[in-house]
Image 1 (tube, rainbow, N blue to C red):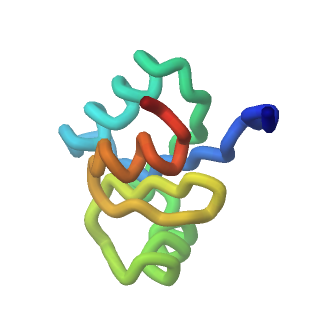
Image 2: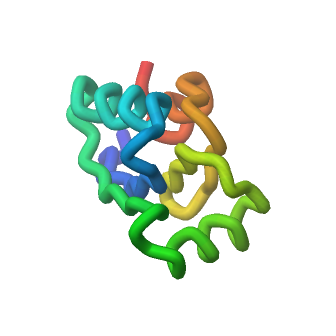
Length: 83
């Protein structure tokens, strides 16, 4: 059986985004480590997020560099291998 290695998870957020808070809470509950990037404070990160996804809305989640726009729990679970 294959070892489940840790996935690299990055969450692009803003302080006022309720869906961003929900995503971060979900990751904490599932004990998923993630890096948070506040695009309201980091214009370069906002440009990077826009380049990757074509989206300005948050949250944008990158799981091993695969983008998810919004809190799409089914897609998050699939990419993380969560049942």
